[in-house]
Image (cartoon, rainbow, N blue to C red; front, side):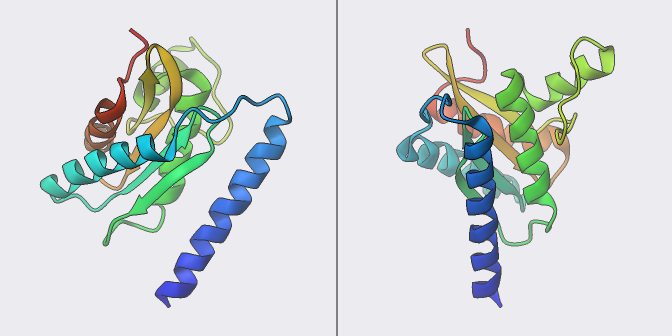
Length: 162
């Protein structure tokens, strides 16, 4: 059963990545989020979540919203992957945290992104002032999700371009 679930998740990620790559076309810039950076961010975010006793899904994407690494901790809800993906989407599209994006959408300052969410938990990762990707977490309260994501982002860069 676990093997089938794992294969299904891998297949979905592969299809999603392929679709995103086709949608971005030949002009998409190469991924700035390396596997090594994603591993460091993931370890920090997961460690933080485990210290808090949170069962979450953590997604690391590059600046093009392509997944680089995913972990769904035991006990994380089935829909947490979908929420983590939607948070990463708005982060990479705007360079804002998903919570800040939500506040700006609510205020009418920016347009809503199709498939995105307007609550906290996704944060941008900036390295040397450049957006290199996102860390998004889902499974607990939105601000708690964001805490875990910040731990991951700060392990390899920052959550703002300053």
